Length: 213
Image 1 (tube, one colour):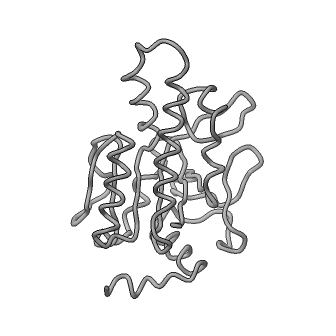
Image 2 (image 1 turned 90 degrees about the vertical axis):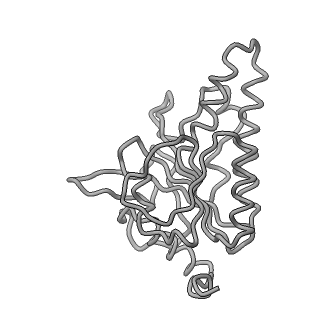
């Protein structure tokens, strides 16, 4: 079982930029929408698809080719784009199917080998109670599945005084969480490479061996 982390945040708060220090030789970047990266990047293995089936195949292929980090960017569009393509369909079965497809992606990526780290980046929304959560396509999908419950760690981006950061602890009105003792601070720099190092140290994964393999 891989180690999957959900990274949530509004557009422009540094989700994609947090990839900047990851090693592209070890990282597979799968984007739900085609757009340029928000940082200078060379040597990155990028693949764009909003198909849940193709996303799973791409992740498995990348890991089979030696990648140990899989990043899914703009995950909410896997749900939103399917909803828009099926907007003419009547009835509510499509909501159940879209929820299942989102679950299929997370389930498949969580089932990758135990040394693999998966980072799923997605937008946020506020529910009727003011609680900030992953953006989906409506209440019916939320009733079918609580996506954050499938993750041990959920980080949330924030921008404070011009500094781009991750929050690692729940503020009482969001879904942020992290394993006990993984981070010393509730606020850390928005650097997924540093997060990945903390994950590897916490779970005893040898990054040095990966880089020399």
